[in-house]
Image 1: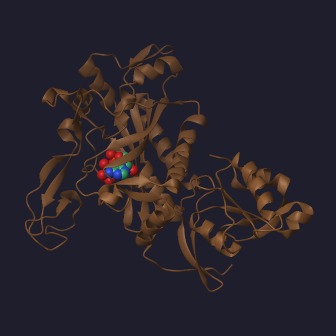
Image 2 (image 1 turned 120 degrees about the horizontal axis):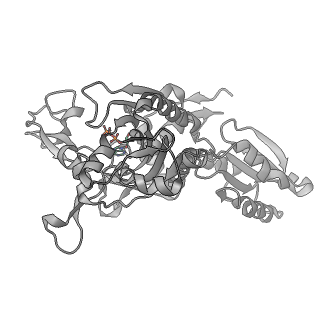
Image 3 (image 1 turned 60 degrees about the horizontal axis):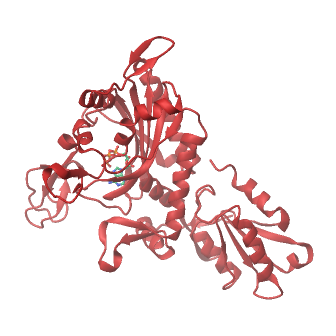
Length: 440
Ligand code: ATP
């Protein structure tokens, strides 16, 4: 097609596109904003939900060995003592003595302030958990935490899920939900915020099979990003060295994506051993072991964890899909989302606002709405309407024109190839479904 890519400052352009088109807004913007929290707009909420659904269906609907839960954000405060978070969920904090900027010491390449070159204080350990009080009295006995990860809600429900689901080891529990971390230096748009959503799956295995399942989940999770439409060249594994491993982990890999601001973690795959269940068993006296009826063996399962950030995945989808190109001497901006996650799947237009075209187009629009998230637009020249849809990542546009009035066919225009072809209006939903492929 000869479309030429244009080099741009992708992050700035993305942030501005997200605001302008209604993907992401800064929280409490009219009050000056909260710099580490974000609100999803009409398109953002659809995109995020589509990614979440894609994850959820891959994990639960497409398999029979994973069950879902949705645990409360507020948990018994003792959970976070047992898990090690009260003691050890800290980051090293340093301040610049000159300009007063704050940094995470482990994220700095230099020993002096990257802002002004000033001298830095000694690092202090800073706990990342948000605290609040349960009930009317604000004393230390009433302290509860906003969960910093969703995983603990899974561990404490291990037995609750095991019994009714009649699962046997190996099996998994999946959960998607909000997590909160009082990050020292949030930033890079929705990459690191203080309130975010995680998509976590904990897979319970026999201790002798941990390595096998670790390898299995590494591969599954990498392939999931490919199925999401992410460019393979921008994905890689990073293996944690001994100094990087979390206190609970025997082995860990991150899946990383090459963002415009560098290679960064998207998801962690961890072999957590029997650390979590053993600790909770010890703290509560509840026997969190598994009894195998056939072998008569009782054991505390090992856990292989896959822990992904939903907001980070959304940013990955946006950054990966974004392109700006010159087509016939005109710039076009495209979000080339996979149809699976595109916030709007189909736009319907009458070519012109006369000759009964809007009425036919509206009827088609209403019919398609039962199958897909659609958008109707009759304002401005059709070329501009196509461009507006390209910019928000709509994979298909359907146009009703004068030929429709004669033979009941409509034009489908594809976002990526810009190819156009005619199909019978009555076959439209079926044709579009086939073009979009399976939902997950
Ligand atoms: P980092 O080193 O970047 O702080 P982490 O190793 O502490 O991350 P995990 O505790 O393994 O992260 O969390 C699992 C996933 O949750 C991460 O891979 C990421 O996608 C997501 N996540 C963690 N912290 C944040 C955050 N502050 N904002 C958005 N997503 C986050």
